[in-house]
Image (cartoon, rainbow, N blue to C red; front, side, top):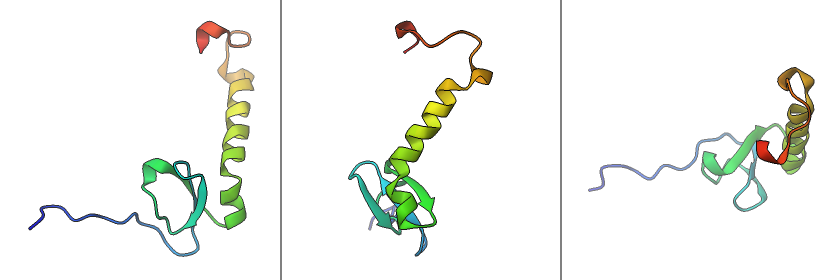
Length: 77
């Protein structure tokens, strides 16, 4: 007898996720939390998850409140 049960990722119907491993949108979810963004309220929002993440990253990288210095250099990367 196994000591641990295999657990299916938790989620609710109507919640949408974007799987970064498979690059697909899923309802449910089907993939583990480490491989997905979400939940999103609609399929359309989940489909643009990577675009939204890029927009947030750009906003963070260019926010003057978080940078005491000028633009990042190659040494900062």
